[in-house]
Image (cartoon, rainbow, N blue to C red; front, side):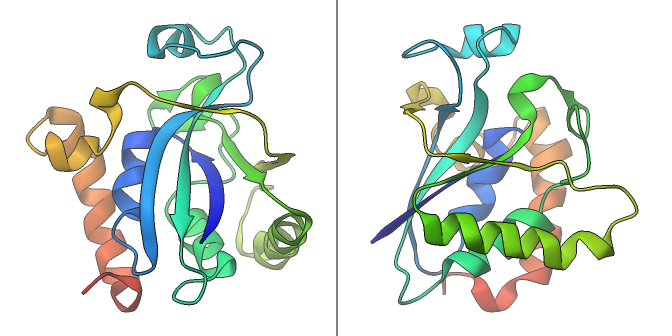
Length: 174
């Protein structure tokens, strides 16, 4: 099993997408990149810790490879938005990749270089070496599947998932 860590806005959205991929074993919502240990959601929302909302993905690289995860990551969020994602504005929603080894770092750099020409604005996704990943509170885990009728899930996540399901139908769990 391999690990990948992506921050692409609200972790509820990112988790809901990656958990549907064939070969993805587990997705954990959490916080990474900040200065304090074991931050709370409230601290993250205040925007003073330096953490971003992220997901840690455990995947079987014999079924889905890291480059495919990169494609899903970049195709399901806006890597050119410098201040968050959509209406989710703040430092906790910035686009980041935390690579766990040099292979991931090189693949991510190459992938960004390859897709940059497809965007009108520069890609602002930053790459960082893996730091401590702090699992978010339990009520954030599997949020969309546990709370599908919540307004945020209906207005933001569901349309994103519908688009994802159509674009990546060959990648989905059966």
